[in-house]
Amino acid sequence: MRYPAKETAAKHDRIVKEASRLFRERGFENVTVGEVMKAAGLTHGAFYAHFGSKQELQEAAVAYGQGVSLSRVKRRDTKKSKESYADRYLSPWHRDNPGDGCTMAALAQEVARSTPEIKAALERGLEAILSAIGGDRKEAIFQLAAKVGGIVLARAVRDARLSNEILESVRQKLG
Image 1: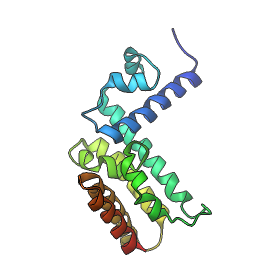
Image 2: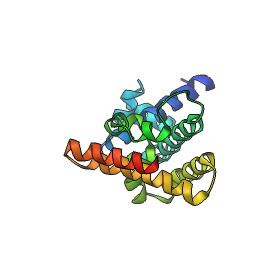
Image 3: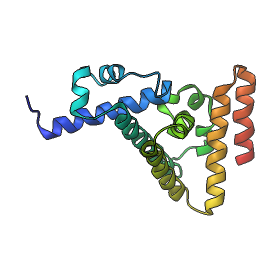
């Protein structure tokens, strides 16, 4: 049975969105195709109508997640909030919710050990984010690397006080 193109595209988008969330929460190896399809409200068998492999899904999920991060960076100056972008990024909420957070902070280590295609997806998003940050490129790279590193370290330690200290220290240094 063939579905209308619009419905097929909506299903595809749902699969990618759920995969991106699950991969950010648990990593590539700890998420099965079946779990992604269930989260998307579809059967496991429908997967191959959308993707040739889990690797293709990983690539699409990384690209999607980078797009979400890009939209957040672009909105950073339009929010009428006392809280800065760095404050929101380096927050306990972001630390504790990787599935809803930055793809680079959640998956960069796995992407580094992954395929050239998945690396390219992350890199394209990284370049777009750096462009959106604007200003001096070296400063933009530093600011982004400090934020991502701060979240990664804050997630990696057991001690809640140390985790909070990491977040606060990086926020203060970034001003």
